[in-house]
Length: 157
Ligand SMILES: [Zn+2]
Ligand SMILES: [Zn+2]
Image 1 (cartoon, rainbow, N blue to C red):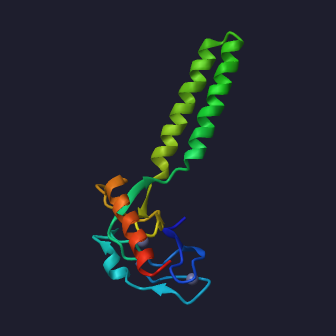
Image 2: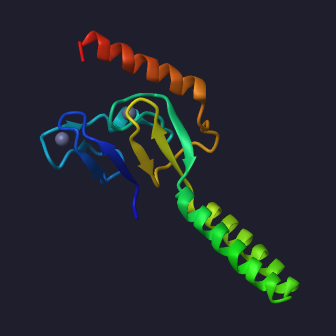
Image 3: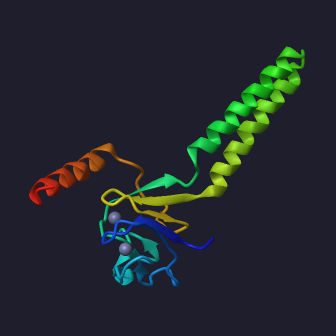
């Protein structure tokens, strides 16, 4: 899967996925005429530094790994491990847990990171990013939340 962006179209509000080719090419909506062609400034040293949808410079880095999957795996391993215990197989029980932890760790490493926009929540998956890119910050998130509320008040919504 190449780099792609999952976003809500700012014009028609529909859920979209864009796969710009090359990565810095224009992002467009398939439902309406919305497009944004500022790829030249959205990248710094080949890494995404701005939201490709709204141009916001605050993006947070998140593991591209569905938490539900991790949870399901842990739950399954725990159940199997309990069954092994019940059958007086303590070694098997421990091995099950260890294998589950290992698979979890491997998946976590392999899945890579994605960048999420604080303002419009667009997700930039498989994009090139700075190794040092900051993780989620509640304070920044709160700032954007407040801004959105004020903007809604301004437009009388
Ligand atoms: Zn649209
Ligand atoms: Zn954005």
